[in-house]
Image (cartoon, rainbow, N blue to C red; front, side, top):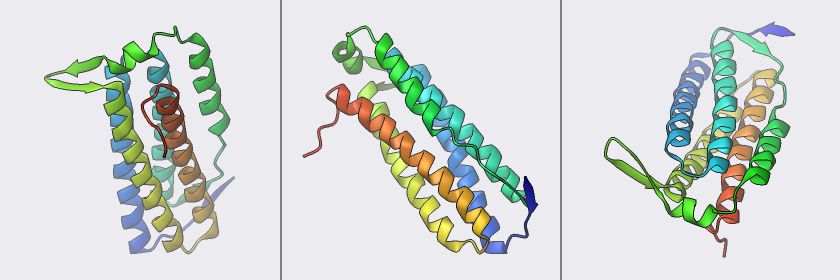
Length: 170
């Protein structure tokens, strides 16, 4: 079901910011999936990238004055993460320490994950602010749904890092 909405100037600006952030997330996930050494990590990053593309499409719909109900894809993210863990070869400590290189940029899988985890924390926070600024409850629900998926992305990265000995909460 599609509902037409009228956005305030402030709401449009907030959505434009979210659009930019989603574009950056898509770019990071695509680039980092190509740089990652561990196939399990590549799978997680590609799955998250796909959801970020869905988020961008949703934001573009909102900017065009349309609200549609969001389908939940949280389960698919967890499933692909579990499948890639089963396919892992057990050579994780070696692959997590290896360096990826592209055009002079070098980063370990841990570096890539750390940057993405920081990015997801930031993006989730910006959605939190936007949710409180929108007058339409349907739009708030859509933004809240996206925020929850952003949190799931962070969780998938955190769990991967923890399983590889890259992150140890104290």
